[in-house]
Image (cartoon, rainbow, N blue to C red; front, side):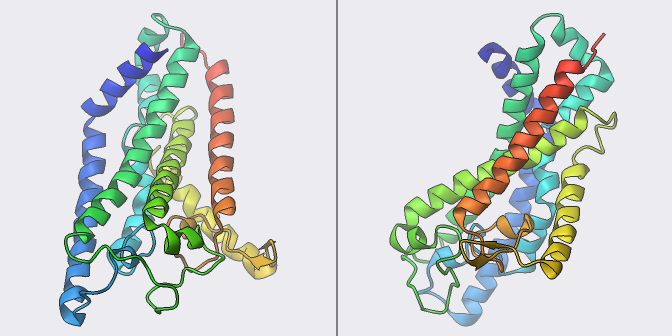
Length: 275
């Protein structure tokens, strides 16, 4: 099993698409950092904590919004399209004759999930390291009007009491989000026969989900623990979003995506006739 995971892992890092995805997110992150530098110089925000401008918490500029908009494509571009490519090219036939079907599909899912997580979490790590060269590493202060992290947002208590732990938790959450997006692409690759189309499907899914969520919120008032929620996935991709997104609600949505994708993927892989 682990030999198959290692084989897929090596294929991942030899893939040009993974390099393209990493370069693309790096360019967007650098562009957002340039915007932060411009505001820093204009307003002289030398005492502002770096955590207020981090993309894991807030997207202040158009660059951040573009980043989250195309994130489903970038996370899927890494490697999860390869399942469709293996089917179309017939490469899967060569693999299945040398190892078990379970090992192949399991390794493909694990590595694809990790590739999506690396793209998202890696981008946030790069962003916070770049911000640390400009803003001081100060703990956020409740009520200073620089952040709207209230008790109904993701791990808001930890954000103000143990910022390092908050960063770690959100990086792991971002990793899971990236993996969930890649899982959607992977499942699509088991159904469609167009490898170039599969990375676009997660973007379409997230866009349609946002439209349906907006419609549902207008018609129904969705509550959790007495708090009105926004059920849009795009609003859950950063902690201090315009919606109220407690951590259990965010993790629950991620779990649903991963579980549903894993079930469909396993059923499709079990029934798939390679020869």
